[in-house]
Length: 134
Image 1 (cartoon, rainbow, N blue to C red):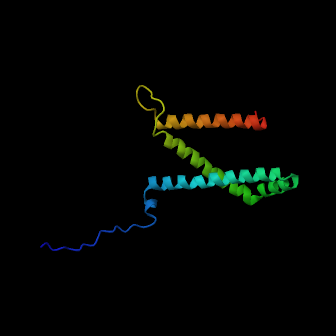
Image 2: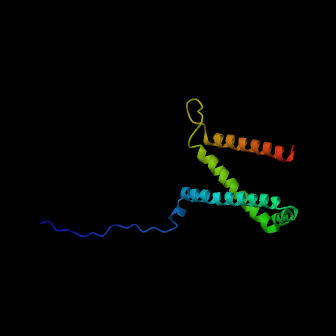
Image 3: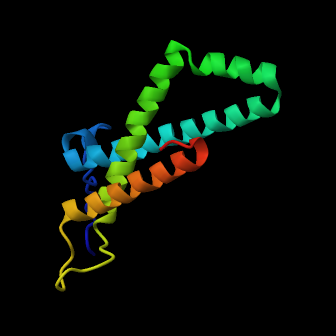
């Protein structure tokens, strides 16, 4: 008859903040956090449309809130996170090259540069269409 031994299972103790020690994991978590700010800005724009639909008084009240100092600061923070979100996703897209140069994937800096240039051109086209900006 075999004797059974009872062993305690190995449980690795890990801090809840373990991911902050590795820069790659930290950047991943920050990139995920930036999407919250992008969604917040989308809700602000929906709120603006709702105020516009509700009439001139409602929209004027919204604009007074929108141009207040706290909202300008909030919009600046949202812009910074939205830029970080966009740039890190452009960097992530370089992991799957869409084209090759002499049979090899293009340099990461070139790919990101192309994506950013397309982003700027499309932003200028949208601004031109919406606002007539030269």
